[in-house]
Length: 69
View 1 (tube, helix red, strand yellow):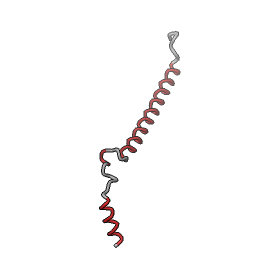
View 2 (view 1 turned 180 degrees about the vertical axis):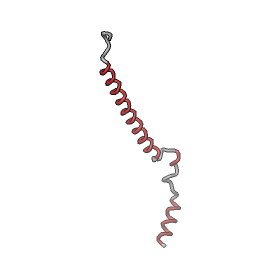
View 3 (view 1 turned 45 degrees about the vertical axis):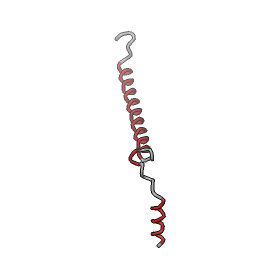
View 4 (view 1 turned 60 degrees about the vertical axis):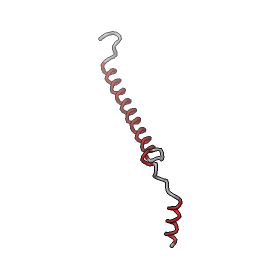
C-alpha cells in the first residue's frame, strides 16, 4: 500500500456514500422538476390551457336565463 492511499474499507464506504448522496439528490431533483412541471402544466401559462377559463359573457347570461326558467 502506498503511503498516500487510504485503506480499502474507507475508499469503499466513501464510494457507497457518494453514490447514495448522488442518488438522493437525483431523486430530489427529478421529483422537484416533476412537481414544477405539473404546476406549470395545470396553470394558465401552458399552451394547451389557453382557453381553459375563458367564456363569453353572453354565453354566461344565456345559460343563467335558461337555468332560471
